[in-house]
Image (cartoon, rainbow, N blue to C red; front, side):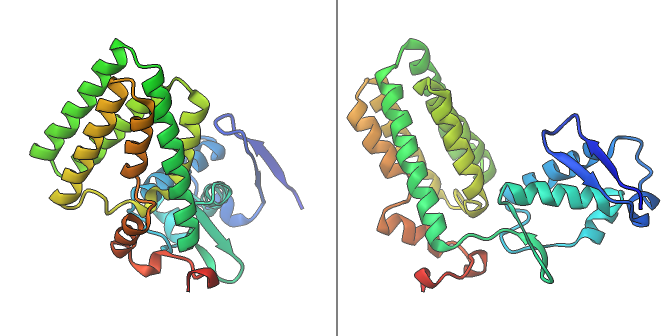
Length: 256
């Protein structure tokens, strides 16, 4: 039996391909398989993190191969890469599905994000300068414009810009990347944020409090304001759970 090992130039993970007839029979794309696997992975990751593919959604290799007009081999590789990122679950005899987290895991991740973001706000207040003050004003203006003239999608983008402004202002790239990685894990559970005017109004008010504290160089207030902004407390987390279908969560004895 003949095996072929291809190392993609676009991803650090070596991809092992088998010699199944199906692997070569339907792929007319001239690009390297590793490149196709990367494209498929990126597309599926965006759909998972954006909520188009919700937690627990089944992922069928054959259907995905038809959708992307490739053989099942690059699809399988893409799913394996997503599984390595804990975005996909591959279970023997059960198939492949978007990974679900337990309620306890979601709480733990959100709690960690809250503490890390609070630290970022504290450091930003400590290191604030005129440039950061201007960037925060710009971020608040974007949030206000989205709140008045846009919808949930527009405000979500403005919210992202605000938090990225704080990350940049903390001047700690390692901390910023820790927060981004944690947010990627939880993003598929935040798809119902900003779906009402009251949610957007609350978020905007909290952004203003965080921004003003940072601009004033008040480390303690900036840290506290950011902690209150993330729904990790009992009331905030309960409200968050109330917006989530229970089918999104993995069953855990500790959550019962």
